[in-house]
Image (cartoon, rainbow, N blue to C red; front, side, top):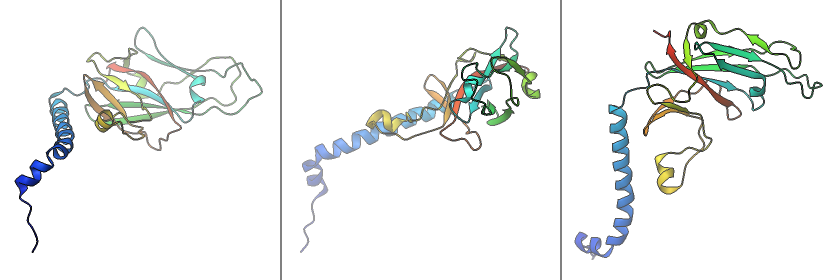
Length: 205
């Protein structure tokens, strides 16, 4: 005859084990609930963010993305004077504009000039839509959000508690513990390097 172990006796004998399993799970549930509530009541980022993406780590040395005192974007290109014998064509850059209010990501290709001279800065044309906008180059937007560019190792809740995590390419807009994911650029890869450019503070109505 099979013996039935009373639940009360089982719980009493295994109290420490059950407590060790249930407390971390309860903590995770509480933190997820708090994070979810905070995200629901938080205001979405009010300012679209502009950043630039390069296909490889050598791309950034050729380009300058500047914002002048009036908030206008300027794009410059210069092949370094060092190693003049290296004549490989520099990679194109992709400007990415994300608006969390409409959850939209627009991209603009910036092409390197053909066979440019070494050590000479060349002004590149600004994409039409971006030329009509006013930017702020401050790392923090006026509403307190900042762009966290992709860390190759995720920093999620499970990693904070248990020291685990996975590789991630996701960018996020972060403010006081609340974050909104930035959509991935089409055909993005781990070889890409991304750099913050600025926040749209005018001309986007």
